[in-house]
Image: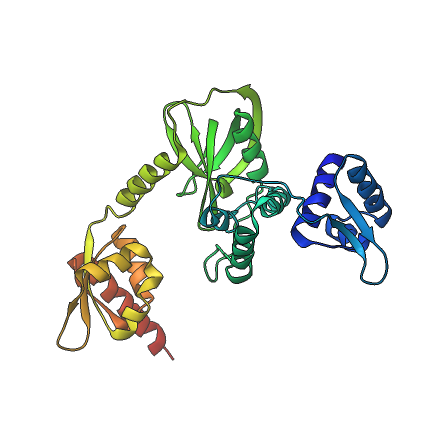
Length: 321
């Protein structure tokens, strides 16, 4: 603990120049007396730190003293200062902050300026608008199981609400948008499980051997492709959109957006006609209903009939006295 604090003190002085004992204490959340003891320890170990007295005084390192980090370009260093989505959820926020401080201290002056400029001018806010990030109660335990290669026993609620028991060997964690997933191997195959759907979880105490040929990124890309094919297995629908519906089409997600870009045909009445993949007739019925009269279903006939029935029901509802 003390060694880590001494290193943090050294790196603060290296990156920020002269600092008072109170400034160091505030940064490291320790007492001023502790700072003085740490400064003495650094001096005794050969670090050239000196003190200036007076209102403008403080502690500083002799000019030219610094640690070094080689082999890192300015672009690579800048990218590292944008990394870290999900670190707080995993309890790694302080660790990431400490790593950034060490990196900043070790960079040459030009790269340090570039990295600092990135922090000042770019902020990454991962969750989408009007969506709160998930905070799964079992995320910490799942992460522990991943790091330590320990099996877990879970009660998992599937998308249709059915609860199943599974014993899993967790291979990796994925943050997709605001949702955390664990990629894990069960009795017969590897799958991705949304952590917020885990009702109960226990570490079994049994360790497992991670497959040497498993690559988390490759698996997730393949899983995403399979999921999209499964979700949009209900065929397609042909719809006509008013300009207002076109402006709100993003509400249906990237697949609908791609369909609009690739298949839109301009009509004489100012609308556009689009062929869009659908998950099922019922999903499309709900999704398209939000557009009201700004969206007309042309095909299939079954979906058009469902939309007509919903419209008639609304007329009856609002015509009642």
